[in-house]
Image 1: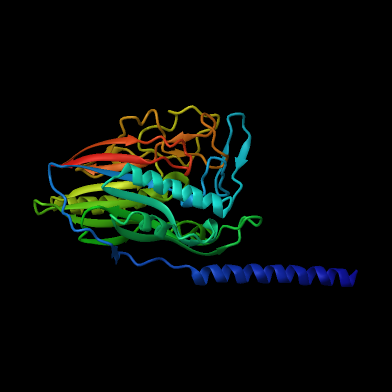
Image 2: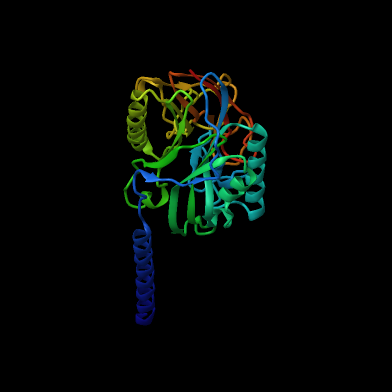
Length: 363
């Protein structure tokens, strides 16, 4: 019995040591990218945008190519209408072939849409979860008639969870594409939840700000944003909105044009209970309204925002009318721009998000 207890004691000691070593590994590899980091401009175009001309922008969270309709994500959980608790399955994409297929299908859609400005979220540079595919280069090499700006917003050490399908190490971010000259771009850091464990699993949240000269001497401020998702009570998202509002206020005071596009991870269309579902509406869906924005800008609601959602619950595979769906992707636009928007129904074929299109004219 003494030998048995001794063996058990040493086994527990080893487990504790390994766990402590892993926590130290995560801590030593954790860092935040410096605020106002200047971003590289690749393949920059030369044309200048003009007032009185119609342009098109597109925002699309491509979900690192993992979210085919039969995919569920391990960090998501929810409740069915009958009270059954459900949780996602996968820590990474189902297979390299599936991830590659989804990213390529998203690229094909983007090319066919032929927008002047494209704002993409959740593109991996190199990540275990997407089998090492450089998705940023896949997009850029397919879109050689666009200049591009990339901002990293997720860089993590190796995450061993879930144990049967580890999420792994991630290097990922947001990509802005433009057919017109970008005069400069910076990465603006956003507040994140710095509590233990959460800081290792949430993204290094940010938005990228690109400046484009307009023919009347002003600038178009094009912002690509991706707000926090796992944020109980929306506390961090409110802090992130404060940073965005401050930037908007400063730029609008200069007389500049402002377009903010992306994944706000907040209900921008009062759509939490709009779409048929057999799930309970999740607690994380907080509402973002005009009242929370500074003067001079508005949320441009898609003309079909009551017919086409932009995000689906990912704790279960997708089936129309089964998953909870909501509108959390879109655009915030300054009052000196005339704009209309449309949610594009891709039926969540290649991502857990649908794209949103904006047609606009600088006044």
